[in-house]
Image 1 (tube, helix red, strand yellow):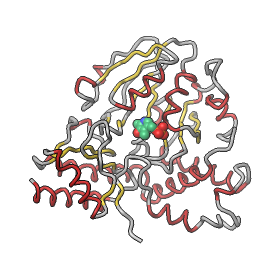
Image 2: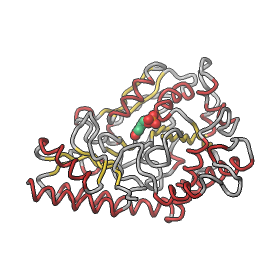
Image 3: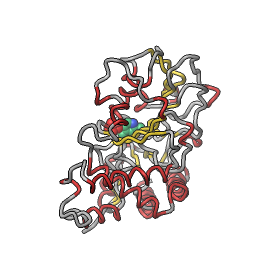
Image 4: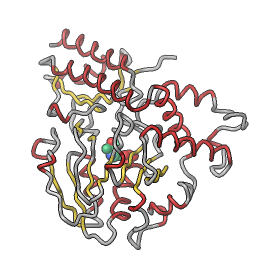
Length: 360
Ligand SMILES: *Cc1c(COP(=O)(O)O)cnc(C)c1O
């Protein structure tokens, strides 16, 4: 068997130790005689898996008691609609910060339900920066303020948490959740598709402050109401049981490594290694302003894009996979979530240097 270093943005690499444990438990979970995939979600075995995963996530992120944790389906993309449906209340509008491709999708969806005030946009810098707090034009009566702390495609990350006064701050943390400690109490709601830094595709996690639950627009279907999922412990319908279980294994793995404080150190060092390699060369470039560079998604371009295909082919030959940039920006992108070991980044940097010395 030979495992590669997979730099995919999502679905992304999972920790090998987690996959090995899942493999060992595949046919017989904990003496139950069945796979987690085959269990009733209402049976005591799965209920214990579900409760333990939630408890571990709460501990890892230090989630305060006045927040609910939901294990949902539909991806972050469904949240783009569920957020206005559930959080507008009596208000007519919401503020959105536009820092790239995922912000834009959230904005387009919100426009179906309300007036969207663009509190700031960095489109003028081709999304290579984040707005400062002083640049945010927040409206007086916004139901909430939505932003994307880490733009997965552009590799742009906020270096601070926006201050939004009375309006709850809502964050799409799909590609940055669990990469470091965050102060959950600063947010009204945090959500993330699992397939980047949590577990397999098909699971979506939402962390919502109690007072924001229960005021959905009248027309909101039951499945799209946060209250439905809160009232039923995320088991109103059949939840994504296997994804929930795997996410639980990932949470245990993170705790074993020392939690999010330890992950922050590891992740920052990995990113620094790669940015130093890019900045230290005229052959590679990253367009993002230094203070807004992502720890998780590192896009870079070659001085001569005619060499892109050869770069990717050579990378594949040495087991460095899925480095092609998003089709909307081209070039390369290395996604280096929690499950990417430092060794993978070191190997990438070595390969980049070899490639440059042959072609530079
Ligand atoms: C991947 C991603 C999404 C889309 O997630 P789905 O689970 O595929 O809907 C949304 N926002 C961000 C920031 C992402 O990285």
